[in-house]
Amino acid sequence: MAAPESGDGNNGAARMVTLISSDNTRFEVEAAAASLSQTLQLTILDGGGGGGDGIPLPNVDSATLSKVLEYCIKHAPAAANGGAPNATAVDRAELERFDNEFVNIDQSVLYSLIMAAHNLEIEGLQSLVAKKVADMIKGKSPMEIRRTLGFPDPTPEEQAEMNAHMLEYGWAYE
Amino acid sequence: MLCYIDRTAWPESERVQLKSLWIAPLGMYYSDGVQKIMFGTGACKVLDVDLDGITPQILFTPDETIGGCEYDDVPVLGLFEESLVPVGRTIQEMISSSTTTEAWFNILKWLPTHSVLEFGLVCREWHAMVMMDQFIQSHVNHANLNKSPRIMFILDPLSGLYMDLEKCTDQLRPHLIPDLVCSQPCHSLNAGSCWFWNFICNPATGYCERIEFFDNDDTFFAGRIGLGYNSEINKHIAVHITYKEKNLETRYYELQCKMRLVNDKQWRPVDPPPRPVAATPPAYANGKIYWLVEPTLGPVSPRCEIVAAFNVKTHEFEVLQGPPCSHECGRMTILQLQGALCMACSDRSTSTVDIWMMKDYGMWLMEYHIELDEFLPDYLSDNTTLLAVDPKDGRILLNAGWSLGYYDPKTATIDTIYTEEIPELPYYLP
Image 1 (tube, rainbow over the protein chains, first blue to last red):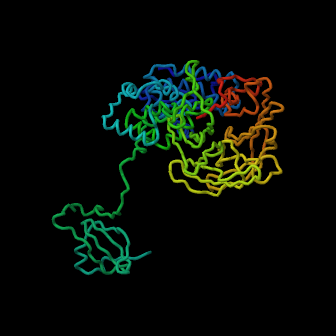
Image 2 (spheres, one colour):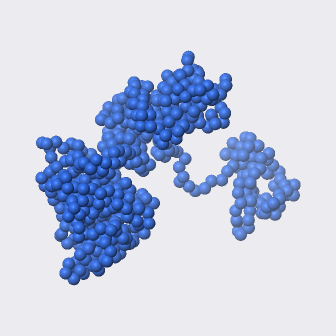
Image 3 (tube, chains in turn green, yellow):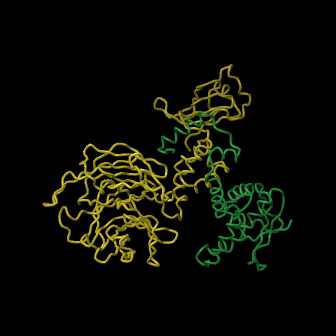
């Protein structure tokens, strides 16, 4: 399977690393992009992931990983500049537009992205996806949340206990 | 070397009895004033010896019925202590060790308070999570991050009935209460006074506690209750100040002052401030609650304006120099903007409001100068005070009693978001 394109900044000299998804697909990306992941950063700094080796990511499937890398490649140049200081308003607006479009995806993909961003510790992606999911569940009732996520319903006793506990904290319900 | 034990020097009978492939010390202790070392053997026997190592004393030999010491060469004995220390995971550990729950932690922290409250009933794990201090702190930081100020009307401070400004329509308008003051939010709680009683509330959750005193003087006094936050113990502190006596002619006054932790019902007396406090709601910033000094009581101050500050950690008041402006020109209010202590000083002759901010070393710098000439009569300088600065665009939220509006310092324009016939406008910002 083809690796995603490495952003515009690729002058041929950039160091590349290989990431291997849980279903054994190999992705070749610039080290700078992969380093957005705190988890990968250390391995890459130690010189890992280059050549034929590759870094196995047993918790991330190829569909999710390609999405994650799309984000990393887009955000790598700004992160390399230390974020905002050098970025022009145009660059920032472009990133914002990209982010908005990026999370405009199927719910199931979004949930796999949460876990991947979490496992790989990609801070920006974590908050981006978390905010999107937060927006999606905002108006839902506890019952709807349980149905969506497949949680079992609490027993009436548990429910009563939770209600009482909340009141104790001074958290009143309308 | 502490001691050397030569097993060949032991008496024959003990040597045979204690023969084992594994022997190791378990601990040292004092018995009858003599220091001893306790050993265990692979055959489950326990002995102790003096430091000279010569005479072993057998303390325990397993009964036939225990049996079980099949392997002579493995360490089978150990010590234990009396303890209630749990080995199972606490709910906090369960939450932080589960990636799924941790991911939900990171999602729920972005939600508004009322959603979090609802979701606390989804399941036991979420319930435990939203009650964790760690979550509450993280939620305050994230849910308010870069958000415009939120405004709620207090419909009934007694029962904690509030109305979000966003829900106001032409048909649905709050009936405003005169003689009501409410503080700026101090770590998510607001304090206020209404007639002769006070309240502490969290309008986001609907929590409200009414505070009454037997020694109240039945008068409305806006400077009565101050709210602070001690970040060392993560607790809110309420300070209550009243006048036992005040005489405007002789300038004689007597203050009484008490404080309590908000979650503790017991009030404790504290030394009152060294200056009389003004009838203006106090403000909290950086570990101190600040009151304005009442200019009509006590010794006449040669300098402009002074502030009495209560330190939430030491529980003591101090007096600070205020900015170079005077009560004679117009109204003064004290407030917190962007974490710093500020004073808004109006000048009715020029229809302006100056906002001074206290910088390091108690130095005052004028941060904003607002000209209200164009916006009369809605924004009378004497009625106008600041509520907050919108972190998104730097606009300043003004409360003019009649009207609420955003003043844009770049264009010097006001965008009125609410107006009302009744002069008093209670407000709150979460």
